[in-house]
Image 1 (cartoon, rainbow, N blue to C red):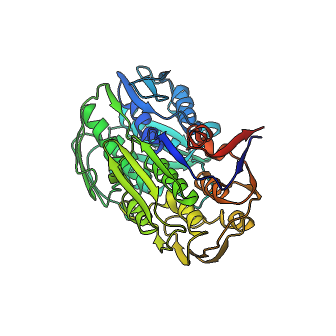
Image 2 (cartoon, rainbow, N blue to C red; image 1 turned 90 degrees about the vertical axis):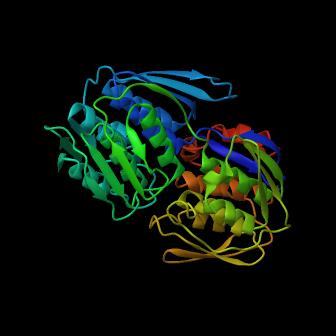
Length: 426
């Protein structure tokens, strides 16, 4: 099993390119099921989760072609997908268990084919993430749903019909699944308390280009008028805001300065304000973000994770890594997932002073972290350990790095290009 070796203490300097957003790409790929025509997605990241979704779509009958180095973007990729002949409506356990976002095929299959059989999903072990809100929305659109033998079995014998749907919480996945289904439903769907993330806006843009009427993305109420049929389109995936934020914190924790090419501060939401409060400079320069560290040690800040535009749960572990060397104490509170502090014991092995009280962690900054062998537990926890190792004295080894392959494209090469002493080992 691969490991990552890092010798810490080297400030990062240089530039790296931010890839397409994984969390935008996955629902966009599922949208290929909505039409017989070809959907082309550009700026596609090449990640393990993308491969898993492509394998699942292929199982369902979607023909897909990957191309690399497309659209004038160095290292970017393109996929052409055509679902002219959906050969099965069963998304099997062996594929769905690898990634929670696989459940996003449920809405498109129901809307276009009128039935779906999708295994209950898997993914990172960061807490309970039920699909009940997905099912609530699809039932409101007229689906008949039964949970049987670990599968969601859904039918819409009379087709889906637009409805008013009020989500009790702004779930990103449920919002996406409902949007996908509503784009082919008869009439108008109004989704209240919808998620507002940039990835939701990106999905709305693509569905509109395919022929649906989509209004209100980026607000808490989305209105969709379904089309009788959708057509193909070519769509550019937005940059990955979590990747951009993670590398910005890499500059902060090493006391460096880097350029994040093809990144947008506006998509970072409260994460940008939080990073600036630590003493990090973030400046938009055309299509890039210039990042530089203005302090010897970061200022301590208190952070509470919230739905967008609040501080993202997917940046919590990385911010905690930075706070381990802050000049004072910081409180980090996790409100989205109940089991997302699994990186704390590993950071503690590197000399961090962290005390967990329920859903909050008190982080008392230390002057220097120490290198240690550590083990990744989930995707974002993995990145927090990379950040800590970049700042630590000595040589660290990070095990179980397959988690990183799910969300960070060419991480080692990008950090090497900014001067990090890092390598991937067998």
